[in-house]
Figure: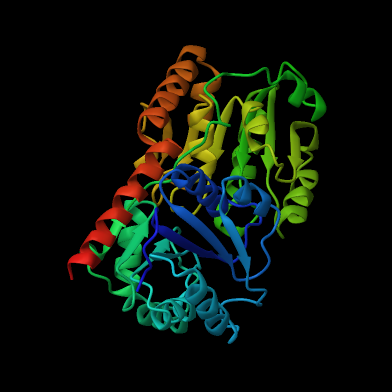
Length: 377
């Protein structure tokens, strides 16, 4: 059982705090809860580059220094941590490997267990699903970051819908509504100032479908001489994408850069932000671009329609046809008022519905509800 304390204690468990979308959302959450909750982050591996950012919010960082979800040492090490700090809530961000942590929390008598779903986890094999279903039997609530993710998890894991809550991702103040001058970033990237920049911020992985982005680029280059493409990301397919760009002799129209620390600066360098993914939970890249007032063109998959309203806050493409993506991008490129309207409405919607502050408030309310429910039982 929990001990009496001034503020409820939440213990988050995550593989590491290496730069990434989920990790950024956790940093927002730590900052948003620092006045009302005591927070500890348990990294099953080492803390990673954003560990100091978490400490800056007042959170305590604990490293288990294990090798991954199947490392048999996780349960014992996590149990010792939970027994020492006596959290009121353990909340896992473990991507399908939270069974040993949930068992450790149960061993230590943690009152409330919460689990997260943040992707359409088509990668999970039957053994992963079986382990996840065992883990689910121990938790009080499962939080999904979109309705699409909630539905996918319910079907995949045979969950009752009432056990899942949806709390969308939020965006922080660094993605400010103030539109800073992007010319310096373009200059450093050697993008000619007169170019119309079509960008995509996404890891180089099969699910992002860079092949579709390149096919769209081929069409646009034939139609406009002033078009330029900016790809921001990292991953094992990066060299293959670079080779494809050179093979099609598009290198004069392309800039490819690794994921920077300051993503906002690169998003500001784009005139339109594109996402060609095969599936998405609730993409931070689009959320951040919209917060900066950039018009977006995206595949209508997963949780994207929960963020982008077609024709109002961006353009959704319902096919995998590069000609359709090219047409949506051209419409924005050739109509400045359309681009401005979409960008302004996108920014307004993000400020109204998807701020990091609003997200933290939703978690705060849910934690209170779960603790009250446990106290009544």
